[in-house]
Length: 488
Image 1: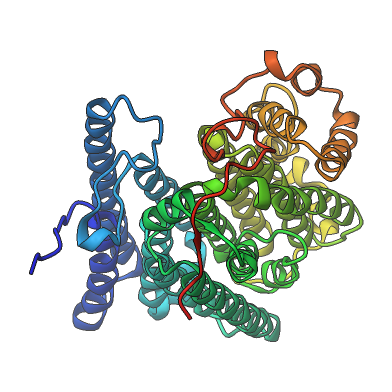
Image 2 (image 1 turned 180 degrees about the horizontal axis):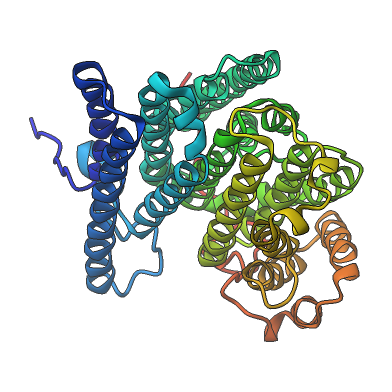
């Protein structure tokens, strides 16, 4: 009997946060220090987690150099614990982005922890545990581990949404988030069960090998399972039509916690979504890419349009997050070659979002619910520094030139559009046409050039080359392989 390999470095970032959460609670029970001391303890655990994530990155870089002949960066890592966890550059990057959001969220909403006093330890422990859960989503190469990370992170956020108990709006937001999140989790795990029934695999690497070697004669169960997994993760990133929880939760939850809640959930959701689609179902890209493209277009259109008519700033930012989820999904449509662009866009956006909600907390109060736009009238006169910073953040989220936001869009859109243009079939071309119509008001020359001339665009968002079955045109199926009936 061969025992599975163990690597504490692979789970080091998550362990550091979990131990930090336990220490915060134990220190609070034993010595009852002020919230600031607990904050320093939580910050130390975040710093240790970041150092371990950097060590993961360094080790993964060495493995990439050794396996230079492999173009698949998702398997250029090590797989301890019986291939349940992967420690590669993607997992390290996801951990670092989660930690950046955690640090920025706690600092930006620190007034909340000061206000709740004796319950600050609970709040900080929930923040650390949720961060550990969403880190695990990015490190999981096994669908059960991904689900475990999803639940650990989500349950902590449900409690954090109703932490203050000062308003009925906060309790309502926590209840809505819990109920809808529970349904999404159930949908996700049901999809996992169907995928296992169709393939006999829960490990994403094994699943990809199975799909590459066999042609399933009855693929409906597999496709339904994949669809349910995408639905469960689309809820976490608030993509249309699974976004209804976001406006109510953002509006009702304590202002000091909303920025962290919004940012870290998106990071974890996209980390798991890209891992599942790029690593496990890459050979089915011609099937799932049009569905993801439809979600992207719906999210961009509905999020942008509905955000305009909102009179509450938090709801406006929530629908803006829906639109940005659609923008990021355009990079997901492009396939595994878009990994760099997707993560750049995601990291920039979530940090901007956390900063915007820090301004909301400063204006509306850290425990308040609701932020009417009228309350921001005259902010440039009363608090000019805060108003100037808020303006920069909003301009960045709008994707205007000279901001980091526009760079992410410029890197994602050419590859996403060009990759879909090369796909055969009128259905796919209609999706591209809708997206180009959406992009046309911005009149970005480089984006349109990438769409009209795919061969000259920035291919860092590239095509679905890695997702083809046995080479050839992406729209052409490979020769038949031995049929395999799934075990019932």
